[in-house]
Length: 68
Length: 68
Image (cartoon, rainbow over all chains, first blue to last red; front, side, top):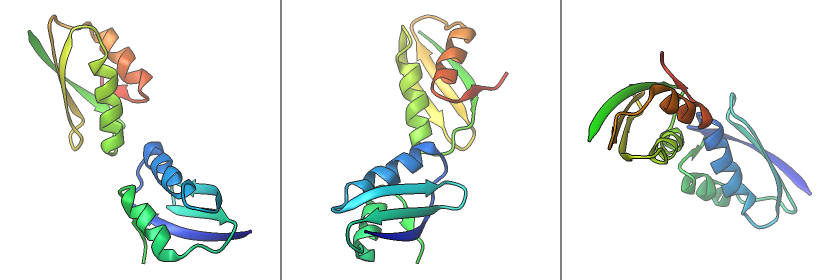
């Protein structure tokens, strides 16, 4: 099990949090997603380390952006 | 057919717009709802004039507030 923290830009409300959480939860091996709306920090716990491009695509697909 | 414009506080993104639009569209007699996210102005077209408390309840129920 591994945990990584990302910064997601553009989330403004609880709906945004739900969208990002939903998109990331659907990635293979993801066990838990925690979002801090104030900071944009998203913590993802997964079976294996995730590829950043995969995380980026999921966040993009939900309508948000992964900070660099 | 009648049209009224309200100001709704607390909408921050497209999801919020969708929530408010959905809540108001479900009121009896409502034909169209248009939301301007930047200004918070919500324009409702309905068969008959709506009672403001009914509109307020719908907006409250969606998690937002009608400006006095």
